[in-house]
Amino acid sequence: MIPSRRLLYAVAAWTVLGFAASLWPGLAQLWQGSGLALLLAGGADAWLSRTPPSLRIERRLAGVWPVEIWSGVTLTLHNDGARALAIELMDDYPTAWDMEGLPHATWIAAGMFAAVTYRLRPDRRGIAGFGAAHVKVGSPLGLWQRQHRLGHESIVKVFPDFSKLLGHALSATDRRAPTAGAIRKRRRGEGTDFRQLREYRQGDSLRAIDWKASARLQKPISREYQEERDQQVVFVLDTGRRMLARDGAAAHFDHALNAVLTLGFVAQRQGDSVGLMSFGVEERWLSPAKGRTGLDRLMAGIYDLQAGEVAPDYLQAAGALLKRLGKRAFVVIITNLRDEDDHAMRAACELLSSRHLVLCASLRERSLDAAVEAPVRQFDDALRHCAAALYLEQRSEAIRRLGMRAGQLIDITPEKLGMALVDRYLDIKDSGML
Image: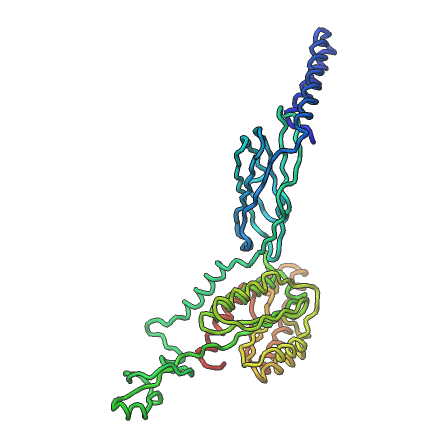
């Protein structure tokens, strides 16, 4: 039990009255009487509030939260007692999150309830917990407050903001939609998966004519094919120390996860299966699955994945993937390459390329480009420029050598990775390389 503001103000006023009584003795009797009254009132009020109040609390919140997006939490307090209660409410939310709307003071009549809503914005992905709420209940005369912990713990999952990723994926596919005058690499009906027989149409290739069906029906019949479906896209995601690099607020690893979900959404719309294997700090394997269920499974499998201080082993990861993946797949390796990774990455790509189509996506720090492009005004600027230029030159040479052996390769800044992967994937689908 702690004194309330009302009691503290009363004690402060009584202290001032005592100071005045020392100057004007006629006030001494008033000071003594008011002190006795305050003491009796405080004691009686404390005795009346000795019984814990009949309070219940319910917390309503979503089980899944989008990162960096404001969401609401509602706390409902039920007063099952016989007297009205003055309360101050504070929830035990994740302290690193931004919060609006607490603490909250309210008055609850006997037998009634009060609902309090506040807002939170998560700062990172993963699992987060809420503890029991802190409730201060005022005594009948308002001179004391008793502190209580009410309610139960709550666990929530913080996912990447898929609504934003969905917008990126749709804009990427819209940019690839055919427009008037555009020439696609593959004409209508010229995929490799047979779809149906139909009447010949002007513009159909002669190779598409089914001569046996045409002879039987006495009219030209074409075989129509569709773009390949039910293929596999498998991400190999580095969770090592280099993915901890940051350009702005988000780490490279968060950009990589966003790119995985963006391409995963596009791939499932194309009828393909999507899977993932992580290596480095934590090894996870999500076998390829298709449709909305596969995408939900992918998101649930990586939302709490974090990078850490471990060196990546590319060759070991390639061997582990070959053991798990039988059917030919489009394998996307996402990492941050250095020139010293040349031999290990080449060996890993060559091993995977024996059975799969491999794309290596290497994330490049935007700060390196900025250091090279920055004006040189002082000697320190020149040193910084030369160091960044030398590093980028060595990196480019290593990536060039890797590209000669591995074929598909992207060297790109993190914020552009998602769109680049979608474009490369659609190019591969159009060309029939997979």
